[in-house]
Image (cartoon, rainbow, N blue to C red; front, side, top):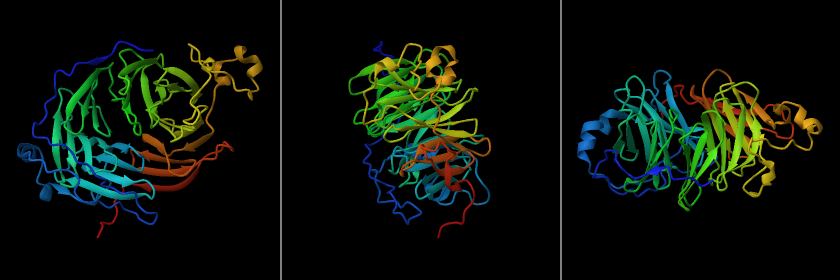
Length: 428
């Protein structure tokens, strides 16, 4: 439903540099050919920024302070953050000594940067495949304060700008010409070309920094926690409208958007049920069940056509669910949704004739494929560029690519495994 806007006027402004110039981005990382194993940079893509005060006070000389490939020479690093880029073809990691960027298919390191003083990088975000990244310091010896967002130009091997806030930064999101900075109780949205503050959002306590933006839509769709427990705000920038969805009775744990921003998947701290909503109409379209026991949901991801939904949790299993609504058929019978979130029992269910007499989980929709993960690491998941494939990344350095067969309902088949934190031989 339409609600009073939670978007407050742009005041106060975080501290920024007045010398920041407009960005002129070009592609920095090209899609590799099948036989290539490393992404190659193109020419310089960002105008020179004359910000000597920032450069001299915060950033070491790139010749002496930043190492190139390979960041992890003697032993494995510790990962603080792992994230995919906007087209899910690359991923970036922040570690206790720097950061790195890797290609997904074929798997391979693009570049790694090691800070001389072994400064940690936590939150990190790529801007598609450009030379621009944004990150925040983390760990016992953070490279930068945790309340500062640093904008890094890898062509120049230095930070070209910083944004300073009054509290710790929880997450960064980038969308075409927008920079989104998530604090625990507020979200700031900037125009990335000149860092003009567009608007800010008040949220409930958000220690995980939950926030998602559409990636392929012409206009920004932004999703964040509302002001109440279990509530989600959906900001449609094109229509200047704000929708409210009461997704769960419990606190939100994770959510995900389709790349166009028209579908939203949500999970609460209970972690048993995943709900899929239409973001334009704020209606519940489908509900699927991960399991019966409580679990912490680490990651949700739609396939490009919204035919499948992948879910990773602390139970050490990745599930794939079949969705009834995809991008080619967005119309759904609204009678399938009700105020108590119940969905109809599938016609093939043997329990449909006694639907009201059995607990709800007997009529739930369960996953069509699973993949068992080793260890106790946190994982994120996305769909690969080949049909019915998944890419799974772990904070322990694990890279899995696997394939699922939805018709059989069996365990997924592992296609390849790598560890991106393990030392490798230096490049020539």
